[in-house]
Image 1: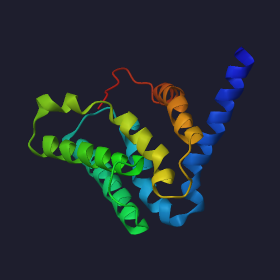
Image 2: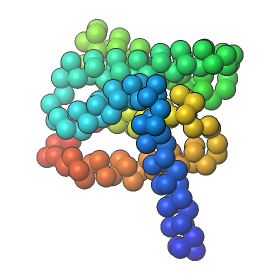
Image 3: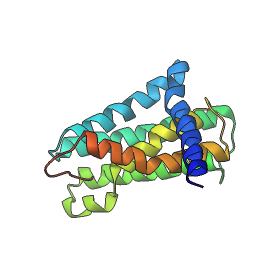
Image 4: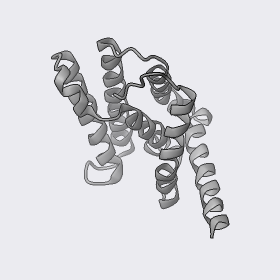
Length: 167
């Protein structure tokens, strides 16, 4: 039983690695995912919570949502309840809500935004799927869910700080 679970984990890890490396092979998809990587690195590297950092993160998430909407609209996929459009609305809603909260300086509402690390993880993971570089499948979706905790733990260990701040 443990061997089977380990082999499933390795299989999903390989699928997830192919997801995050897929934009390198398609330059049109690469330019949209680079801001997410930069945001993820800066968010993990710097401890200081600043308004400009929050504003940058909110802008990047909104940009990703707009880019996905542009790609889906150009592909001819009708606006509806397909998973691609649901993700667009989630990212646009989260990004715009974050922008409003940061611009209005509602510091008491910043904690409502949740864990931006997770949003960035999902953005990086879903980007090749949303860009059409890799097709949606149950295996790709499962690989994203399976890799969520190991990636989060790895980032926490790499960027170990005295007082970690979650955004």
